[in-house]
Length: 465
Image 1 (cartoon, helix red, strand yellow):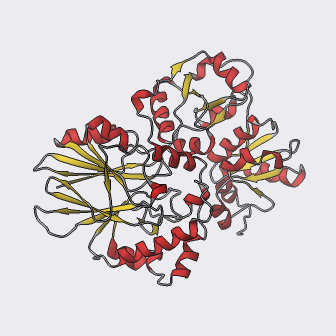
Image 2: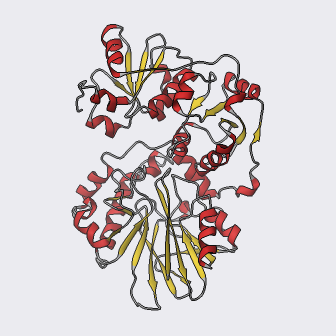
Image 3: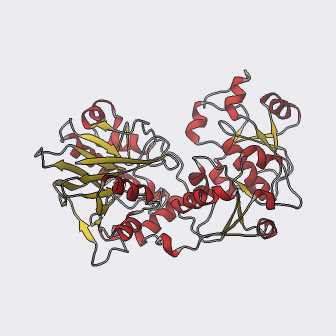
């Protein structure tokens, strides 16, 4: 038997390939939309990807199950659990639908589906048994049911998909799923679907794997034996739900478009991109922060070409309107792949930074001491755009809180003529937020360079909520 681990740090998302070397075939579980890593790994190992499945209808990335099954000529397996509302719309006569205890034979390796509702009603985890040397499972691929140090949140159907009244029922289902796991052997390996940074839980560990016995000892979910207390704990303090989770649920249920059907973005004149930005269209300036701050097109949103690019874009960019990129040519393919990983498929074109002309706008970037002076003497507004959990730990006095992902929906609540100093943890999200404010017509926007970290390093006071 062979096991390979794949991890996308931009989305904190994990997927797995399990192969039987004797039969030279493999299964991939929870593939991402970019399927190249799985195909390359299988080729290196001399395996044929014969089976593809996933733990549930994902909300945080575009599933690659359909894409990989089509490319590899593999059998696709999808959950049949969860009731009529949670069936895959794109499942056809060739799709094998899985129910609790069903088994997929990958050569001598047996993959067993186990229904674990809670995070979603149709959720499955998968045990694997290498029958060449054992009669019992070696471990569990737990998807979004069980993480290292945490469990999957049950509120996304309500906060993302708009199904009001489902989060408490999901929490109760999650309690029962944890009891099912509690009864399993301690030695089982735990391979989760996400790591630290994912919005599918509230306190995921950064370690890529664990054992069930360890989680029973130290995961808070296993310490609560009273259902009501468990539900209250699970629903409290969950992070903000990214806007794009709703479209991910829709796309992954209906079936994402195959990538071969999507046109490649073409290089266009800078004047085309300038007109798009000027008229309220969607332009992503993917240059480094200092270059953007020094001069950019009015209307362009700044999303830096870093590991968080996909998540930031998912929060801000719609999936039903054309999008243009400002980026170096060699960066465009990777950026397009990242956008498509969160369902932004209408990437219409791109231009190089050198193609931009005309009048450019800037974002002033100031140090903490100057920011404090503006707050004390000039009546500036300090806008904290971090997550609520970060703000509870430390905040600057008199600051106003509004998560960067919610800015577009609350612009009318901000003063048009007051200087606004935007602040996050280290300066990345605040510059993104500054570009949102400028796009909306606010001109006196300032970025606190280094964020609250720099503020504290300068010896300036913070307070806890």
